[in-house]
Image (tube, rainbow, N blue to C red):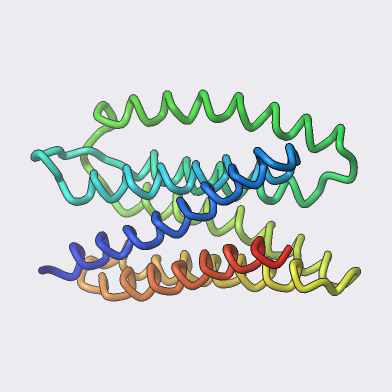
Length: 209
């Protein structure tokens, strides 16, 4: 098995962890009807779907040559953005509005997935690098937000979320060498392992909330 194949397989446990968080959050939502929990559940669903579509595409199952960078990035960005936005909400009305936006974005995400086979299959470093940088930017904003929340409230939840997003940013930064130079694909494996630990931290954060 080649290093790129190993790196791609590393996405599977990440997708499973995101799926577990999403299922747990949806279950809690059915009991509490808490809009923040719904936003979390759908955010992790974005991440789960983007991860698994990316894994299938990069594994070239059934001989596909899909460029799954757009779908994977869309899932990661949508998930990160709405977790970030939910941390900014200060009232139930604001959270309800965020939930409404998220449902509309979910429809657009489905369209992005459906169009996956039609994206140009050629991958050049500038595109993956830009998409990876977009994820770094979004998760950096979330990290700063939770760092500020921890500074003001010092809760265990905010500290764990702060750590999780910092680790996610680190994981995506570690992606850069592999994007720029295929011979450095080992960094992609390390990056996936780092992101896996970040999602485990997210799961723990919402378990103690």
